[in-house]
Length: 215
Image 1 (cartoon, rainbow, N blue to C red):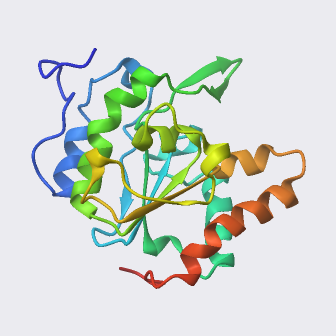
Image 2 (image 1 turned 135 degrees about the vertical axis):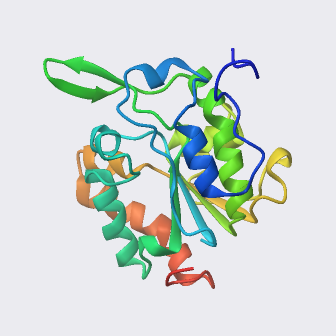
């Protein structure tokens, strides 16, 4: 259980992304920091209109300390380009800021974060939203969606729908859209069909009046 006495369990009271990023490096709100190489905080412009949330960093993100720089990030960049956007429009982050994995030989294999770990990291996500105040939140995968809408949220039921912010996030963003994580597209048996569906979910972002260039 996270308490205010645990070092770094709560973000400082600030809207400075630089201060938040530095403070997050000392987070001890759950045990994931012990095996991770780095705290992978969000990246992007402070005035970004689209705030994209994934599940957690992957192996390459953990090694480089940056979000969405591995294969899933490359697929996301491609899909954004197909709808007329680029990552300069977005602030990119994850629901959980440390890489959770299992060792298989020398390989580090993704392990889904527990609900308690998502909850422990949630104050950092809220702090990022308070700093950015985006118009739209793009939720990539069930874990990301449930970090905002609760464990009862079902991605299969609400995928691609415009969503109002829940009461506790009122005023932090105007609307949200949930879709699959790009890593799910990479794992799909029919990758071409999965990619087309993913792009279709993002197409509304590109056709809206949201900024198409750097914020």
